[in-house]
Image: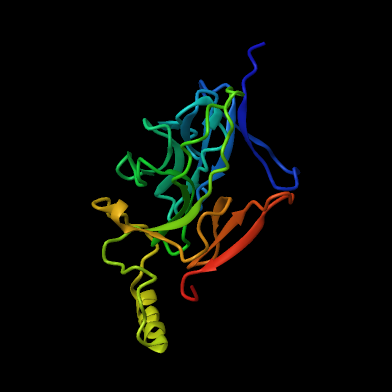
Length: 251
């Protein structure tokens, strides 16, 4: 019939009223994710379009397109803490996935990771100052998903962060005095606004490896409280993931 998929919003327990929002020409939807302010939901559809729904007006905007159909549901769509930016990872011209940022205010999309690395799973620090992701530089041996004749490699990954603002020093610079740093941080908190600011010029130069063991089968990153990130690792012959919590101030 003429029935179409909708975005359904309801209480967590499934009780109460249900609200259905049409998703337009999208036949299917994956990966719905709320903006922190509760005003928008981003998702990707059967044509791998990345779309943003304004919950109040029900207007839908297409803000990008994934690299291929296999990426549906796996783009890692994630909102910045101030709900003004959306990050995701998709394959680019080189065949590697890159992390992209979309600015709602500028309605503009930009790649923020190196074109020769395979970068996945962006996660915004709750402070709005850093973007975490994992990346691999040893994907060259793997082949297309339909090719059974080639031996696949197991790529290894390293966790990274990007300093989003030029004014912020590397969080891993040598420290002279622990107490002094704590005092500085207190002052910083007073001045800080909640909005995320991204200096695009030279952003790739502000990519820093986290001081964690590199070359592991890291699978994804998820932001925790301010200044911390959770990194999941696949362990050979074990189900599930080992989850590491990395804290920037404690390193």
